[in-house]
Length: 296
Length: 165
Image (tube, rainbow over all chains, first blue to last red; front, side, top):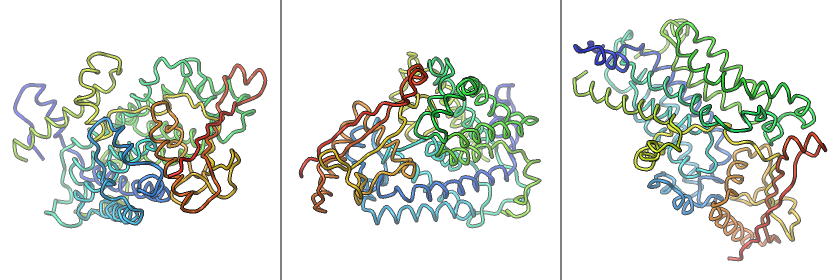
């Protein structure tokens, strides 16, 4: 690993934050997690590939370009016909398998990053948080050290340590996702009055009949007020070594609660759980069969 | 690891971390507005790391339907979803819900215009007897009113005649 810098306290702290040692398997689990969850997302999007991303669909690319806040970039500018879009989806699926296996991992990560960037930009009105989380994690895996590599590349010792900058950025990203979502709602009257969950469950994702929702109103008011506290607590607990499993438990409770109440949020749990993988410690990874199966 | 690579990593990661922390500053603040367009917008589009709005807006739609119509009556087996004029199905087409709902936001009219132009072309090609797209949205009423009379939502229909290509 890199030697600590000679310098003042600040220089050593900055150096340690980004270049201190991380277990190579910490990167491996995120790499595999991203590959698996991206594949799941690809399967979910398969039904929509022509509707949203091809010239035969109902989202006009020229209109999207006109509305773009920055210069438009999407490979779907070149890949327009339904058959070409299908081919691109299959190609991206192959890249996800390659990333998971550690074959040409850097190239595969780059192509997966391009896939997420391209489809989000091609149909921004249909993009949801799940897409954004996968996109940012594909970017973070792309710029991070590679956890495992089957071929090609020079061999790394099995016990090798890598710089921790990628893991630190991933953890910070998860923290920002939860905390910024809470800050952005600060001052919203529906959240302040505790009415959000009641309205949410009167909406079209709800699994409950409106009568039941109205009966549960006092409980939903309390849950609305608790939700921001839970969202802020999750990344904080995950980051602290001693409390990380409480963070996982709280995260599961929050996301499973949403799944129990509403349709269409299972993938949100899966994607956020992929982000939690960045908080695993070397001692957690020792318990996984992964430790003995992934070789450099 | 060489010294140049070390400092490159430190500089890049410090910048990314700085932008992430900066993204917590409210958009209304002057300091944020100053760098929003030249720096934060392009970086957000490239990385999707800076804007997180989950559950920010109040869910106002109780139910949404998109139909292909003849004199405002829904056609039984066709719909406005392209390609193929497929019917819009809930909850199966969950992702289309967001797309259609956001198309109806004020200022997004060009999306709807392009959509109905394409549907018109497809209707003509298939010689279907359809003359419009109807989007029906059941808006959730305020809790005070729901608790008073038990009526959960109020329907508003928007009809978009198909332009003949």
